[in-house]
Structure formats: structure tokens, C-alpha cells
Length: 159
Image (cartoon, rainbow, N blue to C red; front, side):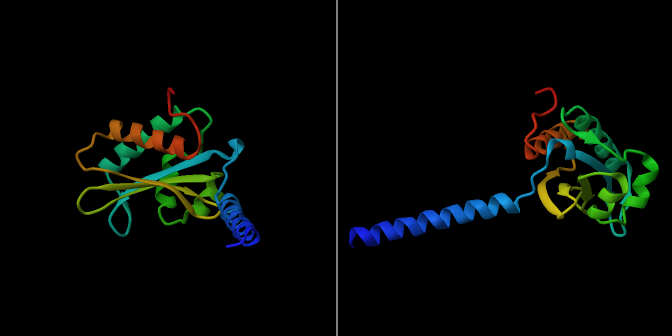
């Protein structure tokens, strides 16, 4: 292989890497500090979605922990909004309560709760995690809030 061919091949590889980096940079949602507004929906079980004591307890613990994360603003925390919000898509929830991000949770028949952090403008899933049926709500909430903070480039509560 000649030097010219090698230089051309290296330039092509460098261009391809730069293109991939640029595409990932522009495609990834970037949440500005003034847009770190979060609505935490009721955690539901079943279809149609219903609220229950375990979901309410876990959701309340998540709200308490997220409220401790510096740089995050919680919105739409009034209980009457929860029931109405169950049928809405994340983008609609964001528009209704002024949130850029939504935390939603659903529990399956085995009792495992899946919690998602969703960017409402594009509908991107920024983080997902699960809570085992036997995990204490406060411990799970602390872990989930720390993961949300990391996903947004923020230090965890008390960190």
C-alpha cells in the first residue's frame, strides 16, 4: 500500500469517526440547566393504569429524593393532576405542567416496578431502572434519584 493510499484511508477513517461523533452530539437531547424541570407521575399497576399504595409510597419517596437534588425543579406535584395524567403521553404531560422531563413508573404482575426518565420534547428515554418487590421504597428512591441526577449530569442529593 502506498503512502498516498494509506493517508487517504486514514483520512476516511478520521472523517467517519468525526461524523459518528457529530451525529451522536446533535441527536442526543441536551438538557440546559434552566430546562431541568421534572414531573413525577403516579406509579401505576395494571391495564387500564391504576394507582395503589405501593406505587404511591414509591412515587412519594422518589419525589422527596428528587427534591433534594440541586439544579432540579419539580413541577406538577399536586395530587389531583395524577389521575388525569395517567392517560397522557409524556409530551402532553410536559406541556400541561411545564416539565421538560417526566418520571413514570409501572408495576408488573410479579411486583417489579419499572421507572423511566423521559425527555418530553423528543420522547427520548434517558434512563430506566427497576425496583424489586421486596426493596424498601426509601432505599429504591435514593438509588433512582441518584441515577436521574447522573443522567442529567447533576450531583446526587447531598453530593
